[in-house]
Length: 206
Image: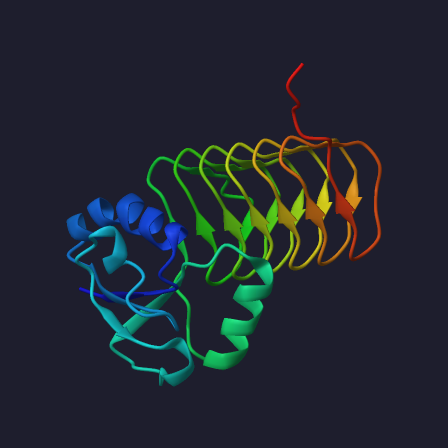
């Protein structure tokens, strides 16, 4: 039996709790609480999971397996720096498909109906949200986040701490730098450097 602690108490933390509670329970494990620097944010939504304290005050506990429950890449980096050498658990949802030839970094979260294809690499503390995929020979950098329904096609590289919005598609062999933001619904056809924002104009009323 293992006791898991969510690091973060926002909407993504509540999603992770719902996604993984059944499989953890079946394995004799459980979520025992969460850490957040806010004032009981999960309780504001009627959630019964207790807040164990602030992230900034947490000291590593051998009885706990930490789960990175923050979606923003910069937030993940900051929290990992605060917690030092604390070990983060890797969680892969039972409905996800992960190739045996892929490499999954420590602390990665792979959500419901996601997939990681042949020879792909998912970096430490990277996040793959629901129904998103990492194609063959593609790389998702450390701390990077794929929102729901994102498609990284073959041989794509997404750099460290880059955020990809819902429904975006990155075409084959495109390289996206570090700390970039790809807007929801974007189709990226050319490579970019670091610290770039890519977006499409939002829908407007006719």
